Image 1 (tube, rainbow, N blue to C red):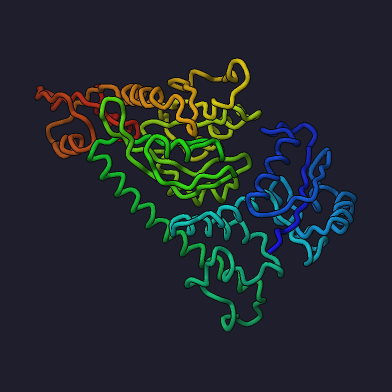
Image 2: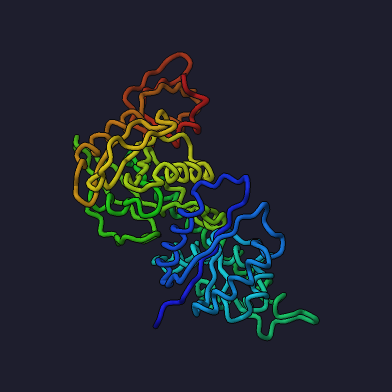
Amino acid sequence: MEPERAFLVGINVKGSRPLLNLHDSLEELAQLADTAGMEIVGQTYQNVGQIDPSTFIGSGKVEEIQQTLLANGAKVVIFDDELSPRHQRELDRIFGEEIKVLDRSALILDIFAQHASTREGALQVELAQYEYRLPRLTRQWTHLARQAGGGAGRGGTGGVGLRGPGETQLEVDRRDIRRRISRLKDDIEQVRLHRSRHRAQRDRKKIPMVALVGYTNAGKSTLLRALTGADVYIADQLFATLDPTTRRLELPSGRLALMTDTVGFIQKLPTTLVAAFRATLEEITDADLLLVVVDANHPNALQHIETVEDTLAEIDVPPVPRLLVWNKIDMWTGGDLPKLPNPDEYVGQISISASKSIGLNDLRKAIEDALSTALPRIHLLIPYQRGDLVSQLHELATVEDQQHTAEGILLTLQLPVHLRERFSEYQV
């Protein structure tokens, strides 16, 4: 089967300050389209003072693109920015049924749908697809309850025979999709509860958690395999892996930690996708240490770091210590590595090559040192009537000393970052 031929469209709004310049953003969009299995036949962009409220880029530019699509035999046009429901409807009308109109968000959702290999991943992608498509639903997108993510085909509801008096098929489809969204949210909540039980078991075993985060294709999965021997899929493409993987990591002292790989980030990541993947991304919020993995050779490495930090802020990650890992250093040909605008936000920086096993012993030591810093000794004074909290702390933390005083039980312990707020009122 021949790949779909796609044409890319970018826009430069006067006065805006995007994270990546237009050229680099379109290049990344081309990589996304390639990952989705499309063939790029060309691209264009438009400089505007403001977004056209009807066609996004102006009717004249739309006509020009129509002629280019016809000349190149392209059947897909992909916009680099998210289209509003109004833009989507108007462009669908202008281009007609022969041309598929996508934006960056829809393309990313399609890639995620292709790469979701577990039930958990499939649920989260399907929810994101429905929430993205619902406000954009038009006649040509009807019966989505039987299409997106395989949804209703696995038990969802269809519109046939269920239409009420005066209802259009579009209204039936909207109602079915809302019902499916509600069902998916319930299923994902069960996933979240299952994960929280696993985390509670891990906390009782007092094994620290290290989470790998980074821009897509920075080499996180390669690093996980190099450090832990994990059998994970690795490919030189965006979003090669989607579902989280957790493995044991042995540190230089013989101490064990758990290392988890999470979905890669990217600029303009759809908000519906971030929301749908909160159950998975909770692994990050409960980590004791974050390894921010960066492709040192990428010309936009600093912008990639900024995207990662922005996404972490969006999912409300607590102030967990971060270790910056410059990866793919075997291909580095420059002098000094890029200078961070905020180096003090990281407990350290280290250069490695996950694929060539360069610097991995130093990285293991840096992880152990960072975990020791992340778990400093603190003192808690627990009232005698709260003996239940003392029992909890013996399960969740490393209690080094316990003394009985006139005011209560004084504990000296190491408490993971994500648990400190729960016991903050007892700290002395």
